[in-house]
Image 1 (cartoon, rainbow, N blue to C red):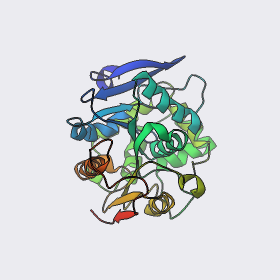
Image 2 (image 1 turned 90 degrees about the vertical axis):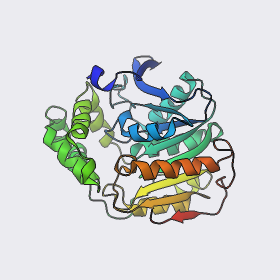
Image 3 (image 1 turned 120 degrees about the vertical axis):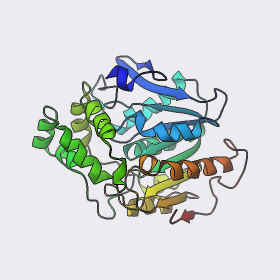
Image 4 (image 1 turned 90 degrees about the horizontal axis):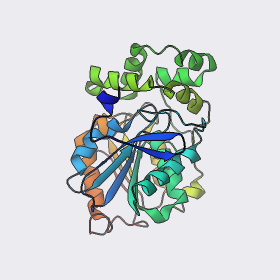
Amino acid sequence: MLAKYGAPPSQFAILRPGLTVHFRDEGPRDAPVVMLLHGSNADLHTWDAWTAALTDRYRVVRFDQIGHGLTGADPAGDYAEGNFADDVGRMADKLRLKRFVLAGNSMGGGIALAYALRHPERLDGLVLLDSVGSPPVGKAEGNLAFTLARNPVGGWLMTRITPRSLIDKSLHQSVRNQAIVTPAMVDRYWELLRFPGNRAATVARFSRPMTSFPASDLARLKVPVLIQWGEGDPLIPLAAGQWLHRAIPGSRMIVYPGIGHIPMEEAPDKSAADLRGWLAMLPSTGGGAGAAAGAPPRVDAHR
């Protein structure tokens, strides 16, 4: 598994006592930095297409968060959001990153939001893709694996028996662009879920309530924010993204028709191009203006 998913340019670093993190750090060393946070039960490879699209102009950092990928379990079994957010800072410190753009999908978006509220002084921008963080709004369809993980009996069984067919079905239930669910993709999610400690970590995470930020907290965000959302997201519905857009002053929102929960995999070219366009408008990453915090809200409803 290490050879398959952790070959160069992968690196491994001790982030804190007992925790060795799998990460990749690519692109020009002196370029503006974009750090990418994957979602629940994903891994750094969810960003492969984005990394390929960005590293001519940006330094891209991504890592397997605790309980995921080749990083494996948290040594203390701590899957509180604050611990995930602290690891963002630890990774930035490890790589001596002073400032960076932070992007997160799903669970990773909630972690990115938590970090942005704590440490806005370190961020040049914040990107949220189908992110947790809103109160319950809209109707979520869910997927089979996440439903089982939330159930005490189902979760217990998942730590012991995880058939590949469960991952196959759950991925199909999470996306609208069904063509991306290839055997290789299913293998990656299935094999890395079975990396030591990851299944127990999944159950531990799903035993916690889903992250929700008060609108009053989001209203004080002082960094530029881009929100990218799949119009057909069955896990975190579009209404959740629209709530975040209203709650975050000056945020820009782009909605992708026919796309589900993971736009960076379902529509990699469009979503990466939109990100590059937004980054180019930031004074700190593109040399331009027009996307600074406090700019009028904007929605590109259908791309």
